[in-house]
Length: 255
Image (cartoon, rainbow, N blue to C red; front, side):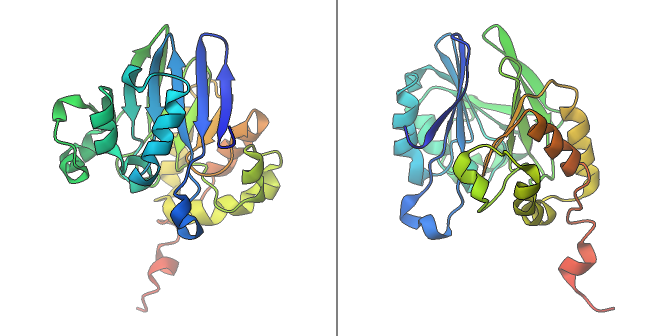
């Protein structure tokens, strides 16, 4: 399929990326990636997005697995391009919904009333067993959301990084994978400099990530980082100046 990329498949465990967006509002919407992990007929859906793409994504997921067999749906943070369709997914599946504990109080505002379905992540993250492997939830707080997590899949060694690694309008997005980090870097700089809270958080996240063997970083927006490009991205992100470092310029207040 045009908007579908197979990221990993060993015959037992499969990871798929969908790149669906609201075509009606394409001119002023972000390009968004959604992800699906399947093992032994059980599925995990990652950052399924807004109501505008719910029907299309439901059909896309159905080509790989019966949506009734989705065990978990993970929302890395609260933004509408991540969690806008949480009510639709809660009605159409029986999956448990994994979110930061910080955001559980807001779920009613998304139209979700069955709080028994929520798995609330503590700030330090956690690990859940998935088939014969595990999924690790890595804290990514204030990058950019105050209640934010990345997801590491131990089998595929893919890090689903949410907004970390996002790029907007890079020509490399058309290729789905970064093949020249220096060419891609300018499209990272403006986004990360504006949306990340500060360098201390960037360094803390990289330290947590490096505990794991990473073969690919898959952000919610833009291109994938595989192999050496994932390593280059981590080294670059470790040095990012975020909002704290740019506070005076952003506020521009005269003393």
